[in-house]
Length: 123
Image (cartoon, rainbow, N blue to C red; front, top):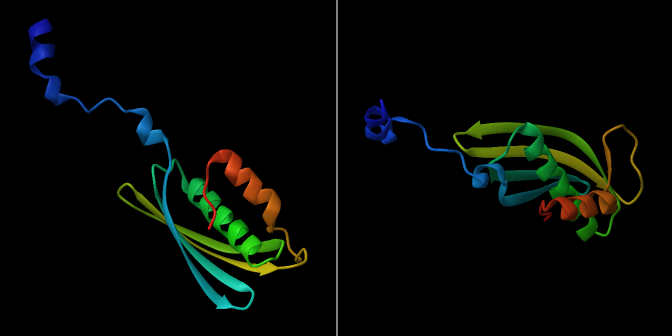
């Protein structure tokens, strides 16, 4: 029995390592669609779910909003796709100096600080 186990070391899947659980944020492409309408395309690997990709897009939106000197964003949509190990998000936000109407609003400073604490990059 022991010989069978030793002889078949290549028969099993490799043991998962911690690196597979650490998100790898691979970049953000920003497109200004209108003065206050922005699209973010994010790419990452090692996401555990679509929410990791959406969080990355939120962080990009928060950072961009602050760069523009404004304080708030409103999430409009996020589409997520996975191709093998690569996850991609395509998200749209309106940005504004004042708190916008709606339920999916982002206080850019608060979100950017939370992103920094979690190690998620902004723009």
